[in-house]
Length: 296
Image (cartoon, rainbow, N blue to C red):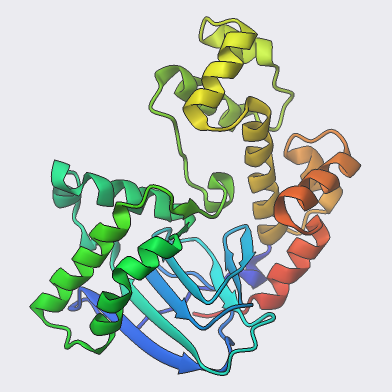
């Protein structure tokens, strides 16, 4: 039975005639529930140390400054007050349409870095402090600027400068965000697609290596070089991402989810989940349900 009572969708103030909508707020606490929307979002917070940022199945306590881009239209997110003691939190939220950068434009070579950033941000993208300081003054100015032609140019320049930071952190797992991400290598792609189709089953290294005509040792080394993760880490992340999505979207028991996602031992599943997510599967589910309300 699917868990429809916990799905919410925000209707943002962005109109069809606007390129983007910007909200500049000072607040004493975060009260808005976890939500998703069809628009892309760039969210900046200042003086927010101790706030918990939840994007998909990622949950982190942030420092004084935080800047996140979300382009996944179904990706749940929320900033929770948590342990924040600040009495003057500033938040700048910019919503813009997914077609703000039309395909005909974003596929041009001059937009390569922006295109890659927008693709990564389907899972949520948190920018490093250096990037935040690079665009801070322009974000501040944009928040007070009349939304005419030049404001669009200024916003695009902010996004371009952010796209140059390769060390921006991808937040949610691909399986939770329902995003397919594949390596540039055809051999690795072939294996990744096999794992996506068979993660619920036992997956053997020999099988994967044989698929691409390599020895197990050579393939393990090659896979890590191309993806930045070991094969076992990759498979575990795919399984855990699927498990977190089922914890949110279904009424299945934790044991059922464990075995459905390819784990063959419940205690091992609980241990891995806590190590990766910082909480037990039950706590993850309870926390998500506590935060969600229905918005139409």
